[in-house]
Amino acid sequence: MEDTQLEINNFILEKGLTENKIEKLISANPKRESKNSEIRCPRCSSDKIRSEKV
Image 1 (cartoon, rainbow, N blue to C red):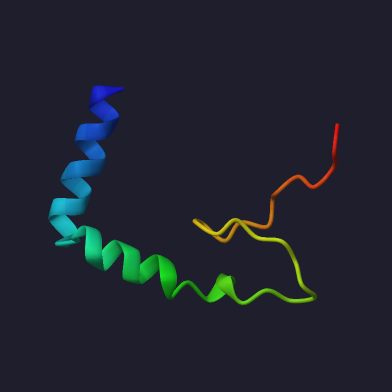
Image 2 (cartoon, helix red, strand yellow):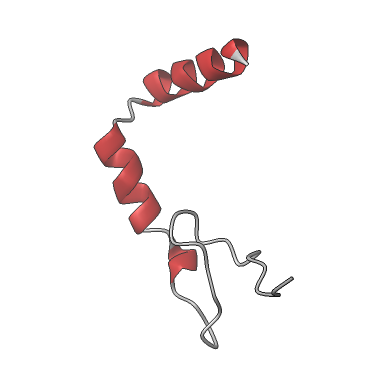
């Protein structure tokens, strides 16, 4: 697990990304515009959210 976190942190440093830049990229994600009132995850805009109640 630490190896993966180290790789991620190294990637972020290589690309020169900051937390602020990452949040701007997430908010500018073109998938955020939903069609036909699809339910999407507010964080990643995934449409793979389960809506069935168990």
